[in-house]
Length: 152
Image (cartoon, rainbow, N blue to C red; front, side):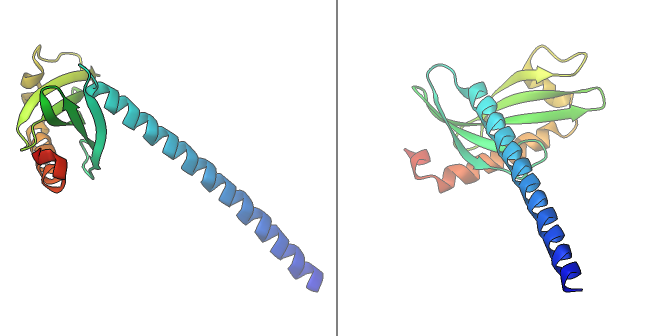
């Protein structure tokens, strides 16, 4: 009977070790995917010699991160937003001033058959886009207030 218990314990330990290893592998892939997403979003805002850094994370269905962009023209913030409708989706880069004012919308990619020529006109094409931009502006204001360099 002691042998039977010992074998069961060893089998359980082996299964636990395999499950632990699988959890580590999944975690590593998750970190790599998140790192690739951050790099791709950062590169969407890196232009004209601007320095782009992750300013904060958001728990929002339309965007995950807010970036701080420092360039010769000053400090601004950006978020890569996913806009969806029944006719398609679009990936949009939204740039904001420190006080949350929308400066620019840029189309980064889409899966929609027809989109307006100007990115600003896309707000009407996607239900909830205006609210998503308002939430992003609010997040930018919160990050800007919490950041000592935003006032400089």
